[in-house]
Amino acid sequence: MKRLNVMAISEMEYMAPSLTPSQAVIKRTFDFSAALLGLLVSWWLILIAFLAASLDTRSNGFFIQNRVGKDGNIIRVVKIKTMRPDSRTTTTVTRSGDPRITPLGRFFRKTKIDELPQLWNVLLGHMSFVGPRPDVPGYADKLTGVERAVLSLRPGITGPATLKYRDEEEILAAQDDPEQYNREVIYPDKVQINLQYIREWSFLGDLRYILATVSG
Image 1 (cartoon, rainbow, N blue to C red):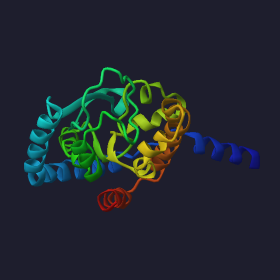
Image 2 (image 1 turned 90 degrees about the horizontal axis):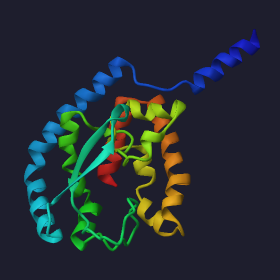
Image 3 (image 1 turned 60 degrees about the horizontal axis):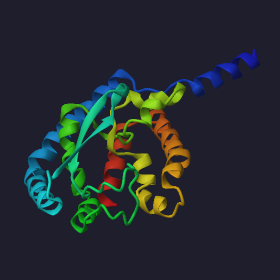
Image 4 (image 1 turned 45 degrees about the horizontal axis):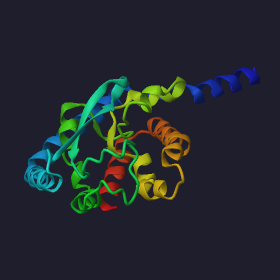
């Protein structure tokens, strides 16, 4: 009998975590309300940043990219453009000191102004304030087994993995092969952090992550 109980506990530990229906409703209600308020308050700053980025990069000031969203669906994430195109660079991994990032772009990244247009993604239900970061195709869409539970959530503007790796660009800049290090070390760690986030989700926890992001 003891062995059966141990096996049951073991299976529970490896079951794919998920939010309950009531938790999902609470999370989405907050996201919609806060995103609407955020856009009403910050639309003028988004407009100024868009115009400044358009002049700075001599292109559309919005950076729009396909990312993997909830249930593996592709979403189009909107940010303020912070980099100039460089035909010599094909990687999607950004390191500290990346020559593609403009001086104004560095300011937008440091102040998180470049993230503000994602409020629109949150309002539409493509994203959440807190959750796994939306990855480019080739990462999240290749998850298997329990790890695919990460895709049960809308991707977030911030979250525990984002906060742990807030200096990710500096970490990658110190590696001989940034793409390999991201693929073999950072990304697998982020997956485990996000699975733990789902298991331990709480509304107050989300508020703490948002506060830590704003104050950090």
